[in-house]
Amino acid sequence: QVQLVESGGGLVQPGGSLRLSCVASGRIFSIITMGWDRQAPGKQRELVATMPSGGTTNYADSVKGRFTISRENAKNTVYLQMNSLKPEDTAVYYCNSRVMIAPNLYGGDSWGQGTQVTVSS
Image (cartoon, rainbow, N blue to C red):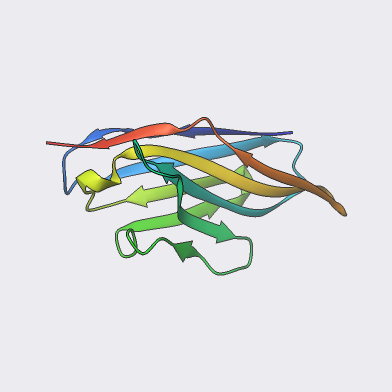
């Protein structure tokens, strides 16, 4: 199994910035992709950003130009730098990963428990 632990959420004023971090641990042979989802109150969970290993980074249209996803592969860590935050960015942010647990064995998808981001004056 893979465990994901997020950190870095909190309360920030509109226009401010936050940086989320997520560390993956457990049975990991290689990481296929890591990313972030979010779920606002009363809304469905939506993809925020994904960063496949050796692939193209993807962002939700609503965060393009404001959020940046990055990875530190040696530490199995993914970051989400969030700038120019808006009240509509308020949500619980979940880290996710897709891994291989052996050279020919898919390990499935995992999610963290989430970290709250609140954008309010």
